Length: 133
Image 1 (cartoon, rainbow, N blue to C red):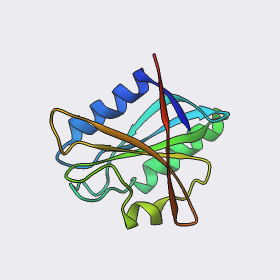
Image 2 (cartoon, rainbow, N blue to C red):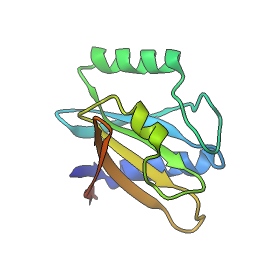
Image 3 (cartoon, one colour):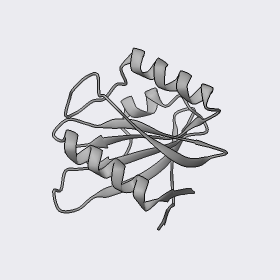
Image 4 (cartoon, rainbow, N blue to C red):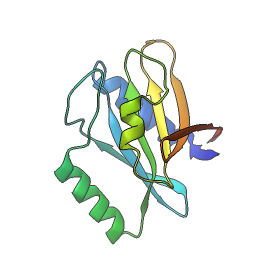
């Protein structure tokens, strides 16, 4: 189960809406599996159907997390025209076994679909999300 503050959820959703119609992406860093620090990243593809972290930005962010004794607790991105479910490409990019993979769908301007998954060895398992005030 992913337990996350409403403040972090709101930041993820705001980033997804701001980058729409392109996919947004980023990380929530934390310690001991607790999501704490919002790190929006640039979609190097600038695409409505695909995302990729810029390799230099990812290197810098992961090094900064190491320096702060943090880990990528949540790796998030948005889908702009489809449901919030991992694509084959998303699964192939899932390289952090301890991370929660959050997807936000911005296909509906009035409603947000916010879902979390564990992805390990190509297997997708949706998990419950608990929102903290």
